[in-house]
Image 1 (tube, rainbow, N blue to C red):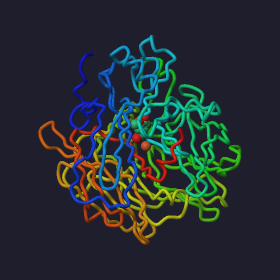
Image 2 (image 1 turned 90 degrees about the vertical axis):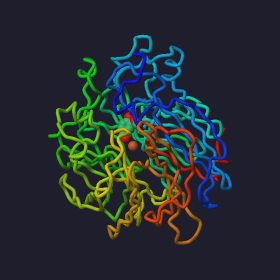
Image 3 (image 1 turned 30 degrees about the vertical axis):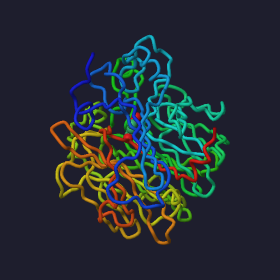
Image 4 (image 1 turned 120 degrees about the horizontal axis):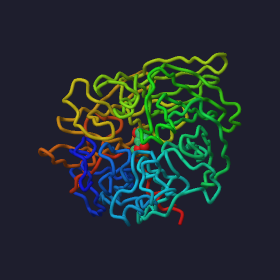
Length: 487
Ligand code: V55
Ligand code: FE
């Protein structure tokens, strides 16, 4: 294969860009609030080579790390490949050597045993170190100044798990990092590693337990006293992989499970709950304790949002036919049994964001993305083939909504939140907005939005002179933290 497949995964907004670039002094329309000082890091999957298989998709794209650096009202932009072992091997060969998404049995024999992760999902900042993460492998450390890749991260040799989630959680008060890795000891293994690193980045605990079935585990949550592991029935199968089949198939008849344990306790204290059959969720807004009741605020749908994971499970449902909601799941730990309470909090959506300071604590509001139910059709693009065109601020106590509806032909990526020093101010959101400017032509801007007044629209738009491929997740690192970067 010498060209990219002409599918949704490689055309339109998803057209590979494959360009490492640096641009100083992006043009700014409006004014950047002076308290926005720091770096917005973005994880962008962008395949360096045409894939070995035509049905490849965004989740396999080589991770690029992008950075918008805010410096006294000026904004600089940089994007570089994460030089994973996989990227290095393919660059040397000048072609793809790794086959299907998370199926090592489809790889070129020359790369047997080489780390397959593309580190393309979430930038993570902890204890003065920057990482790029993906759930199928260990994190890769990246220099936050040069964006040079510093290698795979095993906490100085301490980590046993071969994988680390792209959705770690940091306790805002203790600075501890909580994370897990599933398939911790190899392809299709049921072992989950649960890890805690202290505020200096030392791995202080790693415990292993087994999941109830071979499910994909994308996100998890902490409260002040508990760790919560939701598992959804999108499952893997070693024999299917050996036959060259897909990594994940959604099982509509299998129920979802939620494991809850004391956050600093022993994994043998895990208590398992059971929920709806066929349910699927990727992201959690937040979780918190109310005595012995645990609340989990989660974006749930009635089947898997990825078309190829539905198809592999024999589910014939169009993207527009998926039903979902933003729900609060409440687990009463004083009661026996495996059931929990479910109530709606808001309209369906995904890509939630809270103030980092609210992680694991009772909180008042958050933000997320959705498809405007009364708006123009969303642009095709992004990992599931359909982008978001509305930003919501939700007051979770009162289910109150404020929304920013984008004009036709616009798509918004997950925002990051920048706290404000002003009392009573919600802070700021930074989000990339792509818009269609021609048949196959797109332009990107970074919008700066008052987080307490999203409906009012951006206070500044930063123009980017090259198209940006769809981001997965992002993270904000204030200038006061960047200067503490470890060497
Ligand atoms: C997701 C993203 C991934 C992945 C698995 O958003 C799940 C969900 C960008 O990579 O490998
Ligand atoms: Fe995610």
